[in-house]
Length: 68
Image (cartoon, rainbow, N blue to C red; front, top):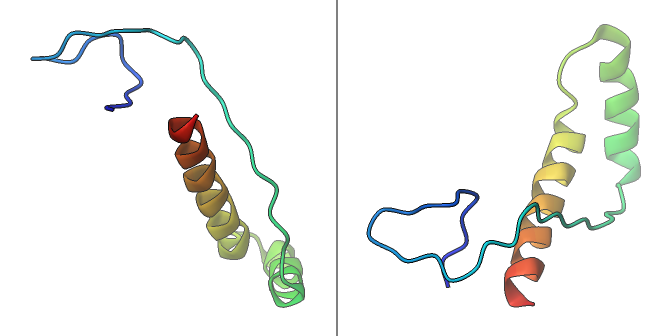
């Protein structure tokens, strides 16, 4: 199965357009990430610990939707 976010794919026939599809997962944070994020939040910038959590949650969510 090919999963895309467009209505057309060159060389393929679209069997079904599902519209907007969303998925969510909840991840637990590590206390070390919370402390580091709190310090980083004081000076500004990307909170990499949270970015990593979001990236992993998004990946897992997409995998679960593809399995359904």
